[in-house]
Image 1 (cartoon, one colour):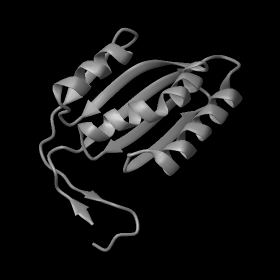
Image 2: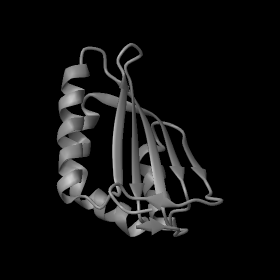
Image 3: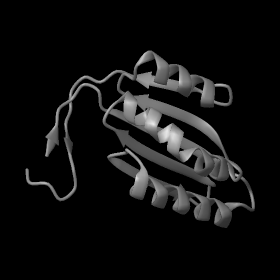
Image 4: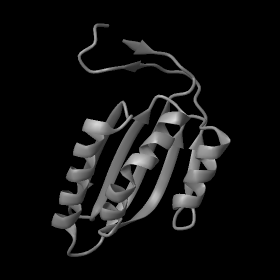
Length: 132
């Protein structure tokens, strides 16, 4: 399945892991991603960690702004657990969310770190296991 929709949103979240919290952070992220895999609307979630610099990078792909709102409603307890072990250093939105989601991102993380929005020019999504 190929999706060429202009509504696709990709979030990149760069987190600074609190000193001494690496194992707890890993546990919280694993739990959050497992929950998202079972119940979340994301098309993709990938999290990577730089253990030497105590940085983590999370990428989440959404079909549209409605999917982001659904994620926020479902995942709040998991997000709070992860945030006990890190701070958001940078948050990037690739694509153009509706005004409600853009405001939610700004109010949720913008008070603590820079948020940038990057309009989409072109692209597609090929889901894993689908025929090209």
